[in-house]
Amino acid sequence: MAEKSTIDRKALVWRWRHFALFSGPEWHRLLNLRTAIFVVEQACPYLEADEKDPECWHLELLHGEHLIGTLRVAPPGISYPECSIGRVAVHADYRECGLGRDLMVRALDFCDARWTEGVRLSAQAYLTAFYESMGFVMTHGPYYEDNIEHVEMLKENRGLSGTA
Image (cartoon, rainbow, N blue to C red; front, side):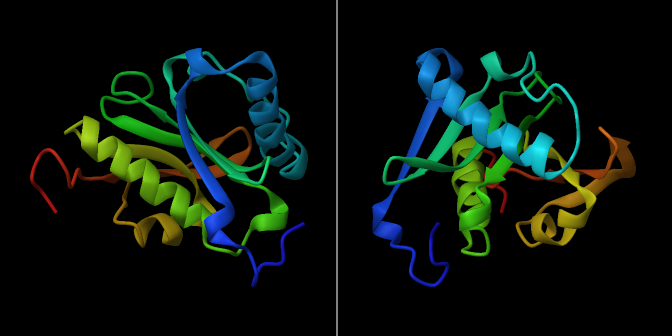
């Protein structure tokens, strides 16, 4: 477990990989973290691994050899006409350190460097203010997805399109 006030950010390792580049044990580790959060912690039985994963880029955040955070980026046309960010997860022992924001900043930079359409996501409704603080605006909702209230949000591209 990390002490929230003493996490050594220099010890963090960030790694982008397309699904095709994961070994079996590496993919298992990522699914273990996502399932622990989205299925077990949130008491939400659903098929966490889906048909989108093989089409996505996945960001891993490691502290030492421990996977402590992840998210996925789906290219345009997979979930929405725009690229999308989803499955944003930070291990419970590392929350409230700003790592969720760090994951999102890296994901937005990744998206902005590749696509001009902006970024869309389906956010758990309680996180609306967090995503608004990152420039997202609500475009639809609230609605229920897997028995959890969600909202659809969009952030205009700030990279290739030249918009802020």
